[in-house]
Length: 343
Image 1 (cartoon, rainbow, N blue to C red):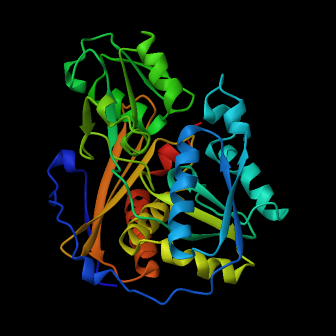
Image 2: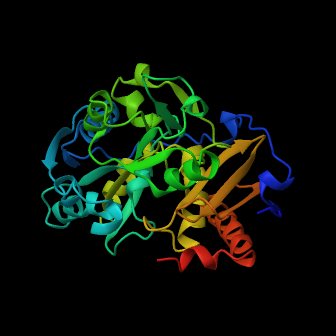
């Protein structure tokens, strides 16, 4: 991997790169399809978004393997059942995938589809991410019927979010707003907004667009304003690691550009011990053939925020992993431990 360039906090005079799409021919490596499986069962949560994601992957698999019988196994996870407490209080986003992994371990399902940002940074023994599909819009979306821009909200306006990452960045840039927790699936969150419980809510743009709610987006928050979570907008396909046949069958669903970008993001988070208890952001995009990774750590209050960025030419997963590690090392050298020990 080429030597990585590390930049400090963009808010304090560091250089900022302008993103351009990477040439597709540099990342596309067509391969012959593996042997088609006879049947597949996809484990999925039963929320509208999870079902959309599972159906999307089922359709792609059906196109690849028209002779394969593919069914869905709907499951309710602990994260779906407990809606009256913040995720940080009940165990984090891993609660959304535990039951799906049990179904795979027991042989009731062959694979599971997840929002990659919900997948813990360390995979449990016996499981692997077989493919990461092409990313949807990775940005956060501002949803409100009262104004079109976040900056237009008057002081004291109530903004709902389920994310400490979003909360910290909102508090840093808009300290006059009141940030309140918001749980539930996409439809439930939109209903709470429509009932007047919030003046605005912040959601992932990808989920809104996938469910046909793109018209509800008042504006999109650019990464400079709200840096996305590692993996945001990407779908991950998980299976048992002792199924090399299945890993090979699922591999064509992967998108190389997305896979390398999210590998760098997740490496950054993993090296810092990122969890749902820590306001952490990480987002990588391609800039003229190099991968540009930006990271953020913050206190929940938004009073203390650490930013950094690094870029390098990345050719494989090892290089992407090293890029994330380089940014994490830079953060640790600049005092990141103060955020990671904050209870």
